[in-house]
Image 1: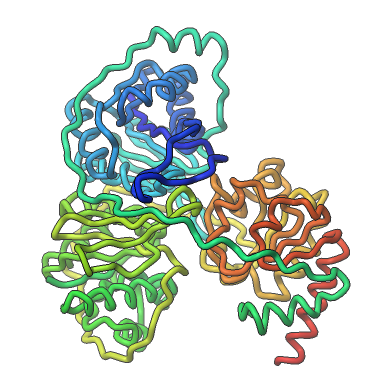
Image 2: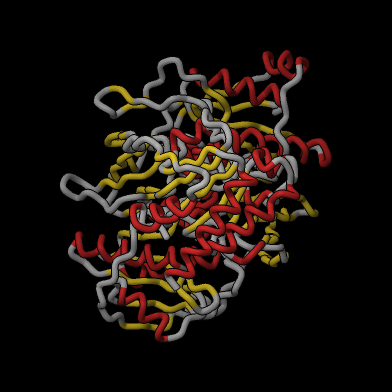
Amino acid sequence: MKILVCISQVPDTTTKISFVDNDTRFNEDKVQYIVNPYDEWYALVRALELKETLGGNVTIITVGTSAVDAVVRKALAIGADDAVRIDMDPTDAYSVAKSIADYATGKGYDIILSGKETIDYNGSEVPGMIAALLNLPFIALGSKLDIEGNSAVIEVELDGGIEVIKTTLPAVISAAKGMAEARIPNMRGIMAARTKSIEVVSGTAAPLVSIKKFELPNPKSAVKLIDPDNMDQLVQLLHSEAKVI
Amino acid sequence: MAVLIFAESNNGKLKKASLESISYGSRIAKMLGTEATALVCGDASPEELAKAGTFGAKKVLHASKVPTNFDPQLAATLVQKAVDKTGADTVIFSHDYAGRSVAPRISALLQAGLISGAVSLPDTSAGFSVKKNVFSGKAIAEISINTSKRVISLLPNSVPAEQVNETASVEAFNDATDGFVSGLNITKKAVDNSGGILLTEAELVVSAGRGMKGPENWNVVEDLANMLGAATACSRPVSDIGWRPHHEHVGQTGIAIRPNLYIAIGISGAIQHLAGVNGSKVIVVINKDSEAPFFKAADYGVVGDAMEVVPKLTEAFRKFKLQNA
């Protein structure tokens, strides 16, 4: 089983978000970066579990400048065999997906996995585009992934039910909560990651969209505290002031 | 030049999110000086299809012979054929499972810039830009599409549907499904869906966390939800320790929801939880700790013990319903 896991660097979930350059650029000052949780906890760990039971190789791929090497090492420490970094500023999903698809062409990956979305740009765009560009099936939001012979069996939690989708391999799959349990890298993994190779290649595509401006949501007005013995007042406010009931 | 909207009907009814997409796409068509076609997938009566016109579409392509289990490969094929037929250069999806599955594929195949999870109509004064939530709702980005073709997926419950009372012509669109062989085998596994209100489509949500002390106390939460006709949700710790099923977990790593009213009971309001609910229009927080960070994100707050406050709130809603019946 030859698996390619797409990972992305994202600001830590507790980051306070602000912008610079007239609100056109994310302020990276003092930001801690992590591997996108969906990519790490679910996609990468499930790939490693499949490798452990079926044998094979897990390669991680990311798009970014050398600044992302630290999170690549973290993913290697969790257990990926090797890594590829496409040396390009990842400004939109298409240029990222096209560059990854071009790299993957002809390399015989059985599964290309990624998280269901990144927690910074929340796109859910890259894996579906990779699948289109490689003419492969794409299953989004997999919460369970098993291999049966030359097929993948994926469960997707939809409202009020679970769908079970069987597809032949190769395929592109995006991972949601439930596909695996997060792993913490151990000392041996961290040591081993130092000597694992990161192949650096050039990007192959230009972006189709660009960020014009960022803004922060309007600040919430102060909370209106209601006396716990006066729930009738709360109901009245929800009806006449907030108009939600 | 034309606008194509991907819409789904479920149990014979157009989905609420699809009506929002039809209205949204029709308004974009008007801005661009063109017309909107709705591709409706699934069984629907003529009266139900007429709703597409009510919300602004000039034409409906009705693919009635699609299987009940959504097939992303079939949906992508239908959209491609509908794009060819209508000459659409702008394709609209809802940012739900179907949109997440199909919109990126169409974007890549058409070399069309994609904005997923849009929360505004486009600004066409200089180019074509649309706002979307980024950093899990902690900021908004205005994104310019720099290609002549565009794909947009609209975040449900963010741009309300508007009735315009147009009449749409309806055309059967089954040639595309006839002879289609899917590479996917899709089956449904039954699962309990407590009460039947879909969390992602619910307008009212009652959610609870560790402050409930144990799963045996959830009856007060469920009583409130039943009284309101609300869906139930929970925080991550509660689904992780198994008090509640995973599909109820809302937050950064669970599902993100945008109801009109979100009532959070015994949830402290960690930043990761807020990321999943900060799109809610009105937030009520009930917590016995007046220092809980969630109060900062709330519109209304009640400092008190959930086991005492929640039954009182349920009773207050019961009285309200009787008075307004």
